[in-house]
Length: 360
Image 1 (cartoon, rainbow, N blue to C red):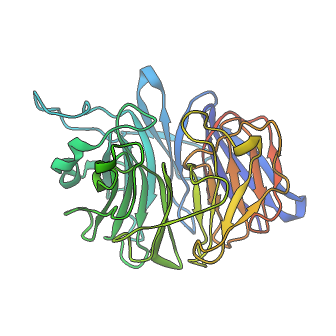
Image 2 (cartoon, one colour):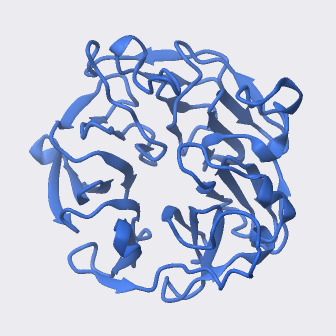
C-alpha cells in the first residue's frame, strides 16, 4: 500500500511517497519552488481539500488549496485581522505567519498564527474568522515571543470524540482549552515551569513556553508537551501537567505521539538556547513506551558525530500505525523509520531546511 506524506520547506512543498514494492520512501512532486512553506494540512481520509501556507516576506502570507492531492493549486484569502483600534496594546494586528493548521471531525478548519491568534473556517478555507473570545482575553497581553518577536499558536489539538474540545499550545502563552468550540477559554498549564523567568514567576501559567503539544488519538486526555524547560505529560486533558525526565536533555522542539498507544511518544533532545544543536553532536530520538517512566535512546541510522541538525516543532511525525515516522531537519536532512524508531534511514540529504512533515 502506497503512503503519501509532505515536507514543508524553506523552498517549497515536497510530496513524499512510500511504496514497499520500490523499497521505501521517494521524493515526488515539488510545488511552490523557491517559496517558504510554513505549514501543510494534508487532505482528509478518503480525499478532499489540502492546504499549504506560504510565508513570502515582503509579499506577505499566502494560503493555497488543492482539491486533487497537490497536482494543482489555487490561492485563497489568508486569515486576516480586523482593523486594529487606535492605541490597542500588544503586537500589531497583522498576520506574520500561519504556524498551525488542523481539521476537526466536523470538518471545521483551524489555523494558529503569529501573532498569537486562532482563526476558524466553516467553508473549507474560503473564508476565515478570528476567534475573538481568545484574542480579546486580557491575559493575551501577557504573552510574548520565544524564537519570534511576537507570540504564536503552534499546536492545535482537537478531541476526536468531540470537535468542540480544543487545546492550544502557545509560545510564550502556555496552554489554553475550550470545551465549546472556541466560545470560551481557560488557561490550562498548571504544573509547567519556566526557568527563564525570576523564581517567583516560574510557575505562572500564562507565560509558559510549550514548544509543542500533541495528544494521543488512543486517549485524547493524554497530552505530551515538549517545553522550553523540559518535558511534561498530562493524563487529564491538560488540567494538570507532570514533568518527566528523558535522557540527555529535556530541551527540544519536537514531539510525536503514538495514535494507538497513549503511553508511547517520541522526542528529539538538544542543547538549548545558547547552541540549539544535538547533544554532543549526535542526533538521537528518545522514545518512551510506559508513559514517561523510562526511555530508550535511539541512534541507529542517525549521524553520531559532527551533526548540527535541529528538528523544528513540526519536524517529527508519526503515522497512525505507530511504526512509520518521518523526521526532517533545519539542515535539509530527511529520515524515516519503519520500526517505531529502532532503525532510521536517510531519505534525502539535499532538501531545503524543513519546517514541517506530515502524513496523509
